[in-house]
Amino acid sequence: MNKSDWRNHFRQLLEINKADYDDEALNKIFNKHLSEFLKTQTGLWAGYSPMKHEPKLNSVSSLDWVFPVVHEGRLRWFQPGPKGFQAGSFSIQEPIMEGAKEFHVTDLSGVLIPGLGFDKSGVRLGWGKGFYDKAFSKISGKVKKVGVIWEAQFVERLPSEDHDLKVDLVITEKGIHQI
Picture 1 (cartoon, helix red, strand yellow):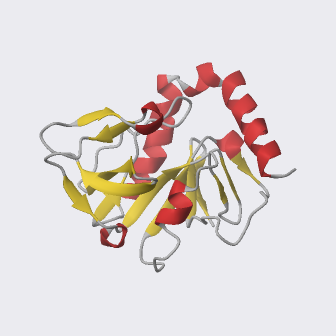
Picture 2 (tube, rainbow, N blue to C red):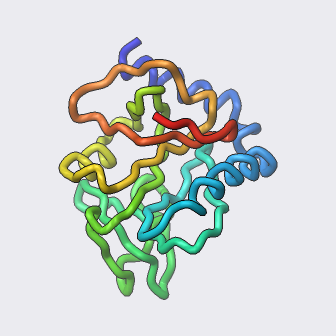
Picture 3 (cartoon, rainbow, N blue to C red):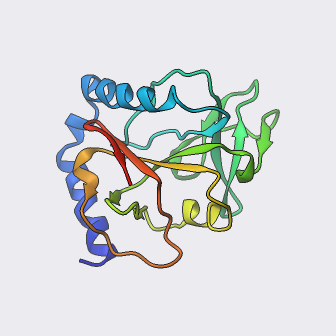
């Protein structure tokens, strides 16, 4: 299958299983594995505000967090200010930039990255806009990249191109998968 076929496959899979992925118990299991991993980390981390069907991040940790804002066709990273969040691009909750503190991608120790799918070599298949691919294309390996998805979206092999983002590990409701 090509990337388009895989995107269609994952979208259908998510639609069929949407009730399961909204389940509080399943998200609790996912967050147990995420918390297990995060307690071993330090520094500034980037999270995300979930779209429908994506794992909801309920983990509380002592890490400092920033969140992406899509601005002028690229991701920028902000620590929410006093005005909090608002619906931004693609109706995703983003920090309101006014009063928020901005960080550069090189300031990050790690990032939690959602996607439509990941494979066992760390290849990520996103929604097709390339925001994460572009944001992390020119940085060193110092930023730990962690894919977060449901187990059904973690497959043996996905098609990839040189510019596609690869993650260091994938966390699902079934556990932590080292790449």
